[in-house]
Image (tube, rainbow, N blue to C red):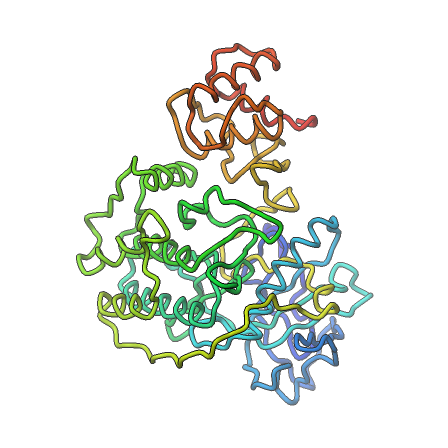
Length: 477
């Protein structure tokens, strides 16, 4: 296995519990996913690992799943082939461990509690006990239903696939199942939609998922900008995370549907940052939604509703939305879900033993594209900029905008302006910038001049590459 940045390299033929590792499927920053088969009692291999099985309900643990019984920790029948997601427990800072543990808990908690036909299934959780292989010892492993690919890889090969409408109906059905159970996905995008051998779709990658607490849920303070609704591009964050509503998933579904049906995003821009700026202008009434002429007429009203500029204008009844999507797609109706009993809103708590084990991030759907490793332990916020490193060097960021060379000046607006305001106010202490509102007005211009004078730059109030680099300076660049 060379040429790829495997987060957790596992040799082919390695055994964990009932499983024998085969080929790698994908890898992200903190996890690597492998194809695996159930090994037989007389099979031979050079690598064998003991395993313990995580128990979510009471925190106890026991021996790994027995290959002769073919049953997982939930008592269900195990398939012959699965996907094993190996989660690194290597050297991490305390901040990283805390953040990654939270992400891992979210996915395991949801998959243990929900068993819906449009959600990927988790059969078991294992922990490697193999001191002879220190690079693997202590790694946590999720035993997952194996998919054949992802919507992301399908779209890369075939933009606007013929199966697109039917897949969208299944994706919407998955969202309905989640929302009906009181959960928000929080990161719906093509890479997190898995395609099974029969061509059907499953929602996956639930580390951003959150259980509703009244009208809101709380999720970590980052997401994928292209699929993030305008109100969450620069959200208010407290100690519980970012407040999110089910309407955020509907915006993401609207963007995803437009991409699937037309091969293009519904808002203009050549980069995610530019499209996020367009979404902000759209929410403020300064940009119109320009759906592609290639969008089939049956979908126009559905996508307009999902992509309404404010959360209050988007649909609240996902059952009704699902019927509209099925009608637009020309598919048969899905089964009606049973009525739920009223629930007592509380924050579920995982067993301490499992929480300690799940320190590797469950941060990728296992057929997602390769991702580079982020340098920071937690995402930056406006009030707490964090040092990140990319091709431009090491420097502070205060949001998802990675601009180093984009020129902005008075009269401009958008995410770059807001990040500028955050850096001026919260990193450099220039309160004269005024409100952090994403509008480059006279106060922001004056604050830029103040900063440029301090930094020994031309005090023209225009933010170009030199000013960006000085703003982001972390002392080690």
